[in-house]
View (cartoon, rainbow, N blue to C red):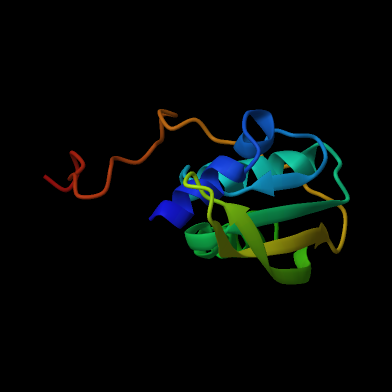
Length: 138
């Protein structure tokens, strides 16, 4: 746990960590998967030719989820150009050095980008929620 905490502290803070940095790098950390998915989609919508999804330690599986959700559900012409695996040495709070695995997934578009819009959650629909009977069925 101490290693994970030191890895999180070593990651960039502010805009770069939240995924709104304009250099095409998204740092995956504690937030939910969809926060990072939307950050990558936003980068592509803003014209980025490629986006790098970076993660360390326990966040690596979340970075893989982000890339697969983008590729399979949001941007069908997104491709994974490369995956770089490495080990980084980080200094923990007590001064000792620890090794943490890291991964960088480089994504690009294989064709023109079709803008993806985020849909509001409370948007009215024509159909009742699942599990509710309509007047005709009652």
